[in-house]
Length: 375
Ligand SMILES: Nc1nc2c(ncn2[C@@H]2O[C@H](COP(=O)(O)OP(=O)(O)OP(=O)(O)O)[C@@H](O)[C@H]2O)c(=O)[nH]1
Ligand SMILES: [Mg+2]
Image (cartoon, rainbow, N blue to C red; front, side, top):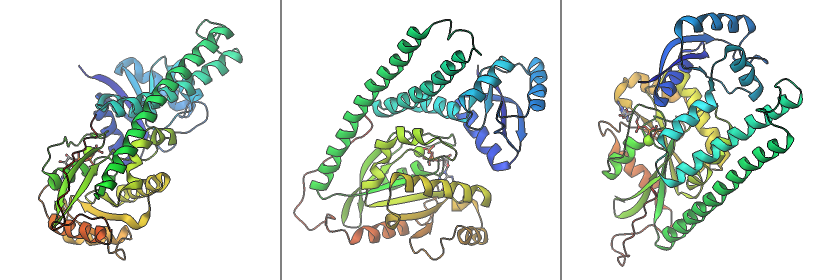
């Protein structure tokens, strides 16, 4: 049976939709939704009156957890949890739970572990701070020596995970060198979670990787070889982005996302069936994440996916809203119906064309390599 939850989110339609998507992906059944304009009040995130209302509600609804769709400071989380006597999952913890459920490859498992340890460390520091102030008698009933042991334990576990991640990052660099040596050009798919990256990847490669309306379906990078006109290129599917994610979580997936820096063309997949509000928010979040990782704007191609779901008029209205109209490198497509996929291939080919090492059919055949990043 699913665990039940009370969801607290912003009073905006797009925030609600995303928050419900996150709850569903994490496996929670939402019994009650509470929406507020402000979720960052200093003591509890919520105002004190709202906390009292919530307390009363708990008696009848009896949820297993309270999901708070904003990043709470450790002190806010602690205050809320202790006054409500309930487990509080903030946006960070909720996304971590989804990541934990979804991580399949050894690298993504390590990346999630790293993010969890960072989260635990920030909470631990807060507990110790409170214990020192005498607000929380004893730190889990233990003294200074044990606190040090506890911190060191987290640190040691972090170091262990870190060194394994360094290994997989080195492995990636070696793979990249190999691709270069063999003259392969590379393309990567990037974009907000659920934009349709994997569906596009599947249609371009003939693969059957899992695609789903749930958020964060893909956590690890898969790379496949495809033929574009006379050339063979490598294409990678990547983890999706989301707004309001703390930097350390992006950091945890850095080695996976780093692929985007070295790739020749980045296809930014946009779900054009979203409302203007969602589109703007998600687009902004994608661009700033790509910027943060250090991806060069010149190598981005924008695809407006799911265009089968909207009318032509809506499409032109939305693309002008996104300010893409002066940018030649964008195209409306549908990964479900195959609309404009041939044109997309041409667009990608053109973007790759200037590149010197692209493999042409009439050249001496090169040995085949197949790189699988799954594990
Ligand atoms: N109607 C329509 N649905 C689409 C299209 N492309 C993808 N979808 C649907 O959108 C949902 C999300 O697709 P995915 O390919 O899993 O999205 P993703 O970007 O890989 O998502 P994450 O891996 O979670 O980041 C799925 O239910 C797809 O069937 C499209 O062109 N049209
Ligand atoms: Mg995917």
